[in-house]
Length: 441
Ligand code: EPU
Image 1 (cartoon, rainbow, N blue to C red):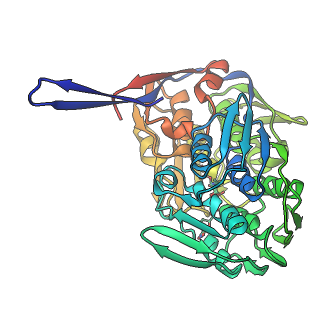
Image 2 (spheres, helix red, strand yellow; image 1 turned 90 degrees about the horizontal axis):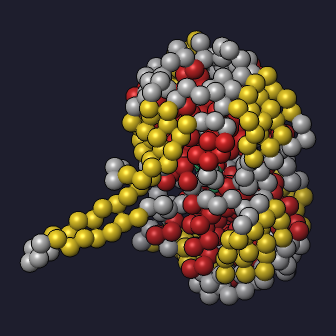
Image 3 (cartoon, rainbow, N blue to C red; image 1 turned 90 degrees about the vertical axis):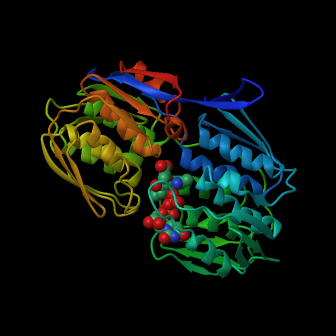
């Protein structure tokens, strides 16, 4: 998607122009969305499943794999380590027999923080790992102290030098780990470390997100002994060996939620297929409070938007609470509601980079610490806006879908990290959105 070329002009001065093309979305707002959309596999499940294959050499197939930039980034990281990774259609084939390099370099980790997921499995299987420390992210600090402290409790020696986490352990040993607050990444990483440790590990205050549950099921299919999956207390009895297996990635609940909001914000009527409605309970209940009519079937959800959306307050929480990954989209939706709503992010206190951009579209949103007050007036006007991160980009697209006139969303490479062909899926629902190459960024 991003292309660059170099032109030499006017020797002998050798002026070099570098033109970087990026994609932007050009949206004509105002269409009600109608029809059906199929949800892709879950990015955050896959980003944990892929590194889990480090734990046992051999061939794996991960089905229902979405074609996403983050999947490409994780594939490149595993390839750098010596693994064979190929995506063919929806099937991701991984052969983890050839691992020779135990390092996750800065160049990969800076593209995607989830690269830290290789720490636990490398340490557990090979007794060493060198992983670049993820820095802050686009919306603020995101520490990894739970990952590091947990590995130390399992018996790893860890030093931080030149921006890298250097970890070593002859043999990890079971222990009791209790998080101050549940962390998706640290639960996944420590679970992958604990499955091959000697003895039993208790992980308390563990994350209960569906993506972590799927990782635990995958590890169990590989031969791990894990009890308490889906609860706050995971008990892992270490085993000496695991074996390769196959799995189909669960549907992406955040993509599903984003499309439901797209239906709701445009006053439309849509059905999302290939989803797990249970994973969306908190979002569905808020959509109903906003006046949407929801019909749930085994693996599909239909939504009919009301003529006037009610303002609904939301406070994000760990699963099964309202996901922080839907906070930006909910703020966009509340711009359309008639009245004032209060949206609190209790997971990431600084995650509001979309707010000034939505205000450029004419929204009236004020932020105080981790609370956004949205004064909905039902009206937005097209403008140029800038994506700063994945979910922020989604909220800007949602804003563009209802804005009067034309909206341009720049830097859509952020959205390509986590939404598969979003513009094609929206076009199928009658949205007027085009991907256009631009020199602007
Ligand atoms: N935290 C710490 N120390 C740690 C780890 C986390 O203090 O070592 C804190 C964080 O600062 C945050 C809270 O714990 O306040 C929860 O963070 P968590 O570790 O759960 O987040 P994560 O694992 O880094 C995953 C998702 C995010 C999602 C969060 C919360 C993946 C690859 N990423 O991140 O997804 O927002 O959980 O649900 O699974 C996205 O998809 O857009 C995205 C950012």
